[in-house]
Image 1 (tube, rainbow, N blue to C red):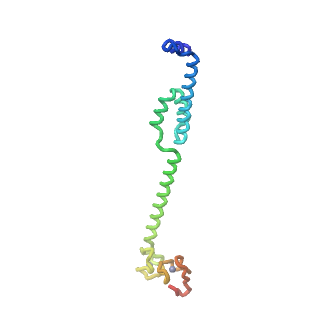
Image 2: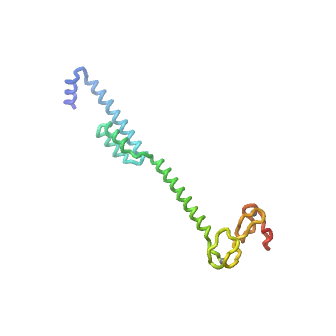
Length: 161
Ligand SMILES: [Zn+2]
Ligand SMILES: [Zn+2]
């Protein structure tokens, strides 16, 4: 360190030792600030924050800092999580639609032939599968006592259908 100081003072004779101490301090603070920025930013982005902190200090701050900005993950952990959540929602929606499509092609409980969910009667064995509400026209389960869409009450004999 003394030799560096002497060399610098030979090159720039107007620099005093105090100046050098101040410059060193300033450099050290800059390095620490850069290292802390890299550390925090890397932590937010799920990187190896401790390694980045150490390397930024060892390699003198600026170069590792610029290198870090070039190689860091473009997304923060929160952003990654948000994207994952959106993906999950999309997956759930997909599954939901798959189930809905499956429900479109049901089997008749009496004869086992394919029927559709909006069929009132099985076209193969004539069994009643669903009933249509006389008030709102929606197709509901034939066992329902009340129309879930409009509140029409179906009596035992099936009146009100
Ligand atoms: Zn049938
Ligand atoms: Zn109804």
